[in-house]
Image (tube, rainbow, N blue to C red):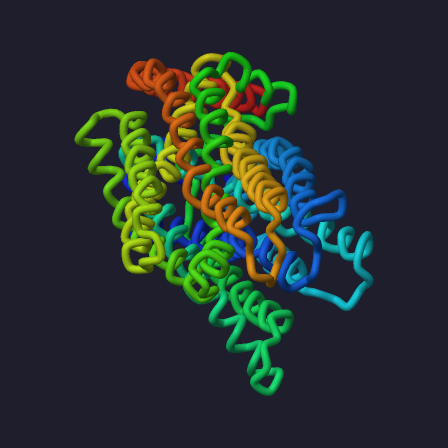
Length: 488
């Protein structure tokens, strides 16, 4: 009998050690992925020398690569659904993909001396697809897919997801606060005091990679998939995975909202460095803006309390969106006052942390809905599309749109910007996320209907699992009796 099968059949309370270990998965993922989403635009345009827009521009790389990468999300989901090992279904991928993830991200931030134009474009496109797409999706998918397998308790799922999001916030904070300073420090260290962002990025990403690998290894060692039932949840064909999505309206609503949400999230992170450098005149303020995202932990740990108080996960997410809108809308009042800008930005960060965290917990409920409706437990497929696919597509448009808007307004890298270009940067940094938050809130209003059905769904699924286990036990007992008679 496998280790996964020896675990309790349904799973209940998770230990603090397990929750902290689960937080390490997103901490590692964000340490590398947020570095990509926050700084790859800047790296391409201001370090590697790739044009912002155009057929061979950075905006094209980021959009095309993300759309191609999005295709890998359902593929990875199906791979997870077909995985059966002594370690479980999702957990082995933390071991298998940790090192490739770190190496691929490091390659994406190398800037070899190759000709401008097509050679640079192809190198950047391929390394970006590998790091931010194929391998990252392979890591992100089991991070989300493992949640319904860790426990069947809805309260424990929210608690575990809270730890996960807190770990993600810490990973985001570390790269946001220290990436640019470390790039400057190591670049100057190897160049005799001169600025050398190429070398700085390579050394910094090597350090981040080592830390990420260690975190994923610890998560692999300490997590257990208690609610994974290989005796009843057999590997399913890809066509059957699609059936779990067909008519799964809570999943469709959540995916639609989340993919649009990630346009705002990517825009906020990616344009921060341009806003700090050109609008506020200090590139290092990027670390301050992105660094305060660590305060999102406060909002993250408030999620279970808000859900308990409102008895409504949908409303909790909408509350986060409203807080985010308020913070973003106050930003113009700060003008050039950095202190006020940071305060208003922090309000937005608190709201974004809630709005971003809730869908990851709610995805587990859509897996239950799919199984209840179709009898198919497609945790890998549904969570892959609901998380990695949404992040990939949303982030692609979140990088493409601001670069195109800035380029159309006359923005030129490393130059004094025109008022039109500065206004374009401000719009992308402040108002584009506000517009998107409003759209997401409207979409989420349709989710509440299905949230009310969750107690009924979980009760019926528990009955089905108990009956399946009993049938399996009876069948095994019958086979044993037959074998005994034959031997006699």
